[in-house]
Amino acid sequence: MATEKLKIIPLGGLNEVGKNLTVYEYGNDILVVDCGLGFPDGEMYGVDVVIPDVTYLVKNAEKIRGIVLTHGHEDHIGAIPYVLKEITAPIYGTPLTLALVRYKLEEHRLTDIADLREFRARDRFSVGCFEIEAIHVNHSIACSVALAIKTPVGTVIHTGDYKIDTTPINCAMMDLTRLGELGKEGVLALLSDSTNAERKGFSPSERTVGAALDELFDNCPRRIIITTFASNVYRVQQIITLAAKNGRKVAITGRSMENMVAASVELGYMTIPPDTVVDITKIKNYPREQQLIITTGSQGESMSALYRMAFGGHKQVEIGPEDRVILSSSTVPGNEKTVSRIINELYRRGAEVLYRDVAGSLHVSGHACQEELKMVLALTQPKFFIPIHGEQRHLRCHAKIAAEVGIEPSHILIGDIGKVMELGKKSIHISGTVQAGRVLVDGTGIGDVGSVVLRDRKHLAEDGMLVVAMTLSREDNSLISGPDIITRGFVYVRESEDLIDEMRMQVIDTLDACQENDIRNWTAIKSTVKASLSTYLQKRIKRSPMILPIIMEN
Image (cartoon, rainbow, N blue to C red; front, side, top):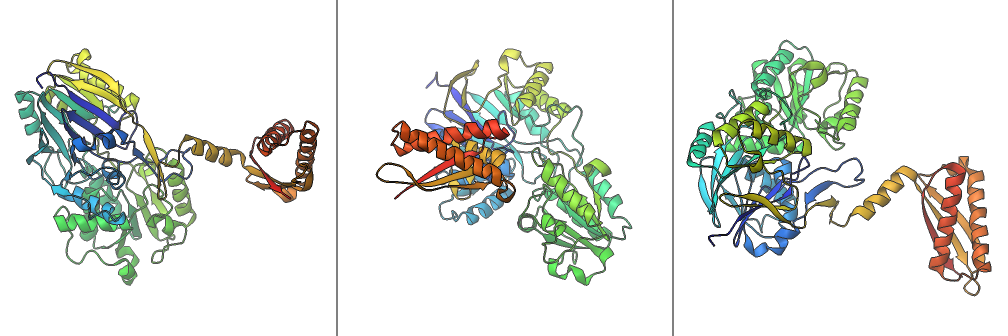
């Protein structure tokens, strides 16, 4: 046991943004930190979410001692309902984080099998051979923590997502004191958030957003409709406080926003001034200049409340020229088109629309910039450094920062999903690879959409499809009826009758050639028809639709 090494295995969150999941393994004990999901990119047609491949955890299920969560964002807790269907383990989290996990488990009807265990900042608890201490950090959601993980080979600090906010809302500043104490005691390795490693300076305080919003609320004669990330409890708190200050009544719409506010108020992370919040169905009872609506939809999601307002589908709110709509958020990469679409529709309805590009400080990041990253490195003084949470450019930039503050370049390791990083008291290296990657979730199907299905969906989306239906004789494979050409997403039939007739003749000629060459196997006939028609269309109109020949027997 003296020569045993600590294994750190990222199953998500490296060389990507999202689906964070890190495995810590020592001997017969496995600790899982975070269990998040990612969102599909533009080529994942029809896919709802992306979760980590947890095959390695399933194979080592008997070793898993617990899943510890750093905070309640989707990219850190969103995969829990799916993973719990594969493995069983207690889940540890802060009060708000576990409240959000409960909402998810209720949706998936998994509350009966979940073992949820609560902890708070500065608490210490054991998970197998690992002794864990939770350290308070600032982030864009309340109840966020870093983890000091004491292992048999040394202390590892896993920061989760964080920033250093010297003027936070409704909470203390990040516990830098404890990080400094741990640094003096000795830190074997630091695994730190790299999301904003390219940005110089410090991440602005959440309070700067409050100051900007105060100016927009003050003496505004319009109804105000504001959207932000539902998880940003501090932002929502500022909005409600400013609304009360300006004599406005607040209505909240959107399920995720309603759930977050309810959980935050119940747990004491949010304080609502008396007689400020009213039901969305009663907001019309107040003068328009006294109304403020907080809504979901900052990313232009098609089912969100703001989307329904913009496109006239919301039961209680119809947006018009007397409205000021504020998007207090940043656009998540990949959502630019959906956000742009909703902004354009709001303008079309005559509303005044304010967002980051035109109104300045309406949003600040919840992630540390370069000077904050340096500060955490300096306080913890780790022997080894592993950048996490980011794409390759973020990880490389963070590694460069670590070298600048004095970490030996040979002690800095940039990992990848599935790579096994082994740590000893005096060494760090990559020792192997485990199965890892992404599992696509489409509806209730988990993992049944793979690369072949995505390729076909991409093909259908780009080139359309045509079906060739024909009836052949059972005796000699001669053509009895058809071929009928059915197209979807390829050409408009009524305007392309000549092309359809040409395709039909091409198929007839191909069937005649099959008879002459005594090709009787239907699989071979289908393949020949498909190849012939594909070649013809490529030469004729430079297009390659998906072709599906169907043969019926008579």
